[in-house]
Length: 145
Image 1 (cartoon, one colour):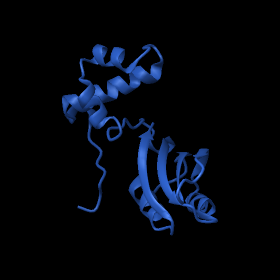
Image 2 (cartoon, one colour):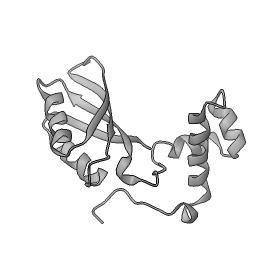
Image 3 (tube, one colour):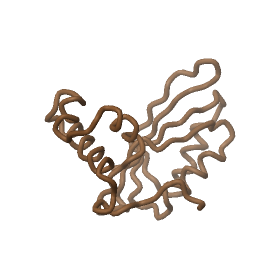
Image 4 (cartoon, helix red, strand yellow):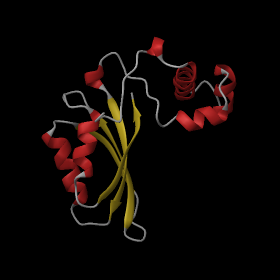
C-alpha cells in the first residue's frame, strides 16, 4: 500500500473516531471552556482523545475547498521557505498563514495553513514533494477542515 492516509465513511468509522471528531468540533465551537468539558459531553477518555486527535480529521463535503495545516521541522538553510512556497505556487495552493520560530541549534519549527481549493493532487503527494526539499526534516499534517 503506497498511501499512509485513507478516507472512511463516517458511518463505518469506529465509535472512538467519531467521538474524537465530535470532541474536536465542540472544542472549536468555543462552547466549552476546557477539553475536559468537551470530553465529558462526548463520553470520550482523555487518553483516547490525545492518542487520536492529531490523526483523525473530518473532511468537508467540498473536498476541493479544504484548509490544511502542516507542521515542518526545518534545517536553518537559506532559501528553504522560498522552496516550500514554490511547491505551493506550482500546485496553485493558496498559503493562508505562516508561523516560523527562530532556529535553535540549526533547526526551526514552522506551521503553514493552506487552502487546497484549486489543487487536485492529494495531500500525500503534496507532502511527499515537500519532503524532497533539502533541509526539510519532517512534515506532518496537523489539521484539515
